[in-house]
Structure formats: structure tokens, C-alpha cells
Figure (cartoon, rainbow, N blue to C red):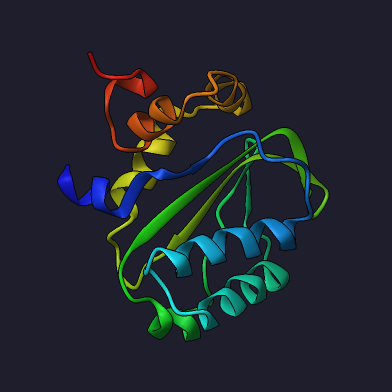
Amino acid sequence: MSDSKEILKIENIILDLPKETSDEAIARCGKMLVDNGYAEQRYVEGMLERDHSFSCGIGNFIAIPHGEKDYKKNVLSAGIVVLVYPDAIDWHGAPVHLVIGIAAQGEEHLDILGNVVDNIDDGDDVIKLINKKSREAIYNMFCGNSNGETEA
């Protein structure tokens, strides 16, 4: 699954972030997507607009900010960044520990999100994952390697 490994780089997984607002988390994701060449700055506006019109919180302590349809033209290449908040942040009234920022024009990111869905049945799975405090475990889970365990 080499495409997934290019879409998600281990250095784009940030652990142990302090509490901040959902808008600040989206801005952080957006900056990382821009800084890594996945999107133009304007895409971040689309991420904020999307969350303000329809929350990107999906339950199970997860939020997946991404740009509105009109901002897809500001995506340069598919990319994902992951932010981990040990102390949940408030996402429109729901607690969120895992923020997955996405820049994509098509369906390039769906394999990675499919791995997340396959490996996280409920909020307890998110808590277990973030408590590992391991970028490698998160990366491996997202990329479909052995349910979040690091490879030998």
C-alpha cells in the first residue's frame, strides 16, 4: 500500500497536543497540509467553512476536517495529517481526541480512512490508540499494518 504511505507521512502525526478550539485544530491541520505541499492556503478556508456548516466530528472521539467541494481545486496532492489530543477538545459539544485532516480531490484517501474504520469500533479503541503514545502505532493502523502494532 505504497500510496497510503505517501499520503500519510509519519512526521505528520503529532502527539500530545494541548487543548485548543476546533477552529485552532483545523487551522493547525490546514497549516500542516499547506506546509507539506498537499494544499494551497485557500484550502484551509474551505476546511473551516465545511466544519462551520456541518461539523466534521464523526463520533467515537474523532473529527475529520476537510475542505468544501468548491475548494477541491486548491488541493495539490492527496495528503493526511493526524493530531492527537490526550485531553479531549470540544468539537461543537462533542469530545474529540483524534483529528484527521484531509486534502484530497478524489478517492485517494479512502483506503486510509477505511483502515481507521476497520480498526476503531468505538471510542475505547481511540483511547487505547492514543494512550500508546506512539506515532508508529498510529501510522501502522492508518496504513493497514497489524492493527496499530509496530512492525518487527
